[in-house]
Length: 266
Ligand SMILES: NC(=O)c1ccc[n+]([C@@H]2O[C@H](COP(=O)([O-])OP(=O)(O)OC[C@H]3O[C@@H](n4cnc5c(N)ncnc54)[C@H](OP(=O)(O)O)[C@@H]3O)[C@@H](O)[C@H]2O)c1
Image 1 (tube, protein in one colour):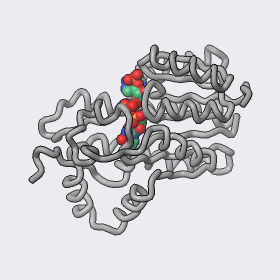
Image 2 (tube, helix red, strand yellow):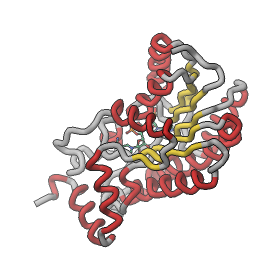
Image 3 (cartoon, protein in one colour):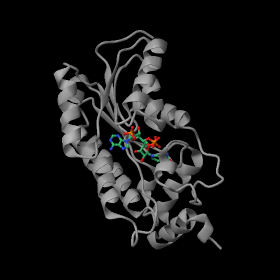
């Protein structure tokens, strides 16, 4: 596929997992890329590989997106290079695992900043680009978005925010040519579980998880179709639907059982 200079995608959280895999999906389709995260060396290695394989231009931008300044600086740096985006993948994010009564506050506030505020900031800052190019906005939410999540209470709430926000602006943007897709993966093999310190959670322990590549490829296709909410995997989809017809306290109790630290389960 040859490079098309009119198509450029920004992917946040491109140093690992789903974001790294999304980068290849966009590049295969002829998008030039801007990759953003803190792990510059990892993104540079990915950029070199993608440029060789797909003959597109890849720009790496080191960015800490846990502050508004980080998001604003990323926008300014992209504009300073004269780049207009035709796709934005707000994918950077992480979770924290543990009981809310004893978990540390500051990492949770930082996670809220990255998972929610940065999604809002970058969406707003780049919407003029997306409207001008009739572009695509892809926000990585989660199946966590559909119900409360004991042991990951703050993380689940951030993803409910991303889903609600994405659907609302998708409706506002009808008729502009811009589509908004909330990608809602279930547990996926990536750096996520390690970072969230949740390898002992019953949600993932001993489970065979889909790869980041599988999730990114399916999510990319959903974005190209302009699908507003996409849940990869039949079981994930069934679970996401079933919570709508189940009393919320029962759903919450079930998630508590499914997420519990395995040593504590008897
Ligand atoms: N894996 C799952 O089970 C799962 C399920 C549903 C949804 N998700 C969502 O999928 C998205 C991608 O996660 P993943 O599973 O691919 O996990 P991952 O492999 O840990 O990747 C997370 C990405 O976010 C970036 N990131 C973290 N903190 C950052 C910061 N302060 N500034 C800029 N970038 C930052 C990381 O880059 P640096 O560390 O280099 O900055 C990395 O590229 C997240 O939004 C996550 O919530 C994951």
